[in-house]
Amino acid sequence: MKGELRGSYVELNFSQRLYSRNFGERKDSKLTLTLEESSYLLSKGTLEVYEKGRKVELPELLKRAKLTEYFVFERLRESGRKIRFGEFEEYVPISENEVLSFEDLEKLAGKKLAVVDEESDVTFYRISSFNEYGKHEEELKEVEGHLCRERVIVKDVEIFRKYFYGTEKSGYVALSLVESLYLLEKGFLILSDEDESFLREKVNEKLYRVYRDLRERKFMVKTGFKFGSDFRVYEAVKSVKELTHSKYLVKLKERVSMRELAGDTRLAQSVKKKMIYAMVDEKPKYLLVERVRI
Amino acid sequence: MKGELRGSYVELNFSQRLYSRNFGERKDSKLTLTLEESSYLLSKGTLEVYEKGRKVELPELLKRAKLTEYFVFERLRESGRKIRFGEFEEYVPISENEVLSFEDLEKLAGKKLAVVDEESDVTFYRISSFNEYGKHEEELKEVEGHLCRERVIVKDVEIFRKYFYGTEKSGYVALSLVESLYLLEKGFLILSDEDESFLREKVNEKLYRVYRDLRERKFMVKTGFKFGSDFRVYEAVKSVKELTHSKYLVKLKERVSMRELAGDTRLAQSVKKKMIYAMVDEKPKYLLVERVRI
Image 1 (tube, rainbow over the protein chains, first blue to last red):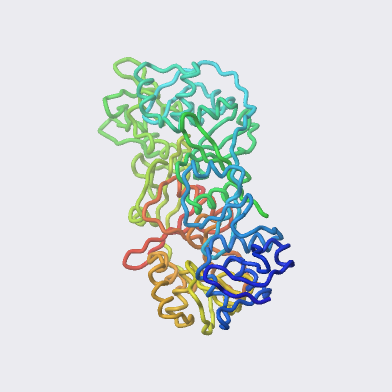
Image 2 (image 1 turned 90 degrees about the horizontal axis):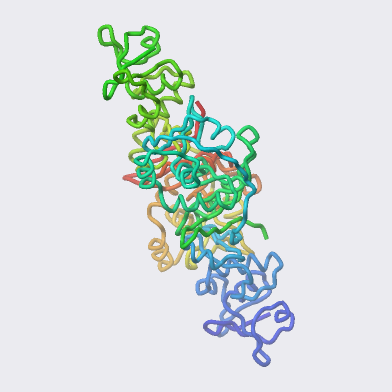
């Protein structure tokens, strides 16, 4: 088929074959294609494009095309989806250089980011709102603690062995600040007034609110440091001896670059966990991000 | 054994047993221990500490101890190393909250970071300077290209299939900006003068200098996007069909937080690659970071 380049679009005689495959817009006896649709059809050898008798090659069209969207269009078309250019269904084309705020990501819940990397490859990430609950049960008893700089030291090692708080050292357990404040607020940790006020000062407020919220959702929560995250999250922990793998990694993030998102989800996937971004607004909010194949 | 707390140290009768295990300093018939050494011996049940007849418990000592160093001391001691407190051999105690500049990290080449996380667990990362060379060989021929926004479009698909530049799309290859500039400078890419000057404007200078340096070291270099890095690096690539796994991930970093370092090395390890941080000073410099068990 032959089309004529007319500035920002290509015009050709109406083709039922193209039109029924969702290419172009009908105008009387003509079909008009966007530059991206034309590029695609040209690259496939279906279309030849001319401008006043001169043959137009692919790069000339692509120079003026929306390239990120084009690569996503090409990818989705090649996977058999008869999408129209610009109407990408649940797919949201985005360049690897972009940085999104948590709020931007939140608006994309239920959709799939189609990230175009430097090598024009397209990777898909599903964004979902996360509102799950765990099954962790515990029956704590009171313990006495002492704030030592960034830790609370507790003598009763059962709080680690049975309840998985802190880390057991030789003859004592070192609790993290968020664990300590949580136990304190729930009435299970006894601290001197001085230690209590220091503890409240030292705790990172947002981190604590996410920790507490996840705990109140009946998850067990530990540091995610070794995975580069704030927390790793267990559905339930019976005891340290019967520990199963954690299910989620949680990172507090107000802005996330596509590259970081790619790295985070890759790491989570490789350790069989799911990646969650969290933000504290009036209350903590969560988004689950997963790489998906299409 | 019994010791007396005297402000910033604990004093006891000289003990050959402790002294030969590298604890304390001898002063005539006395042995003086740091608060951290005393804490360690107290936690092990070897030492009792008193202050004017009152028994001193562990938290009281730890409140005044250097906690990060203490946890590393405890960890190294428990692994059988008879180190003195404060003399950590090749180990550098550091808290997970720290952020190091590339220059700081560089000074630690040959040493091991001993990172204390929120749960007082210690993880070890070896820092090494990286000065390796690859074995990639190629005999390129000239190709013509067209700059289309962030890509150079080339018709000759051999540049991908055989030489692994860019990505093959339908009937064309899309080169990244760094690949294009490299090929241009080496005389293998023909661009119009206009395209050339736009290309030079668009390329990220530092990223390009690292790309070129690695290429000149005979590595093959592609984007590391899916791993959250700038580049993935192959020792050699014969053709796309015979592609083996890449060996390194490279991230340009002027400052790196311990948490990011933990995440990066974990990801690299899980995909059987090694993590490299790069910085461009007068010329590109590299540091290899690996988690090590001790």
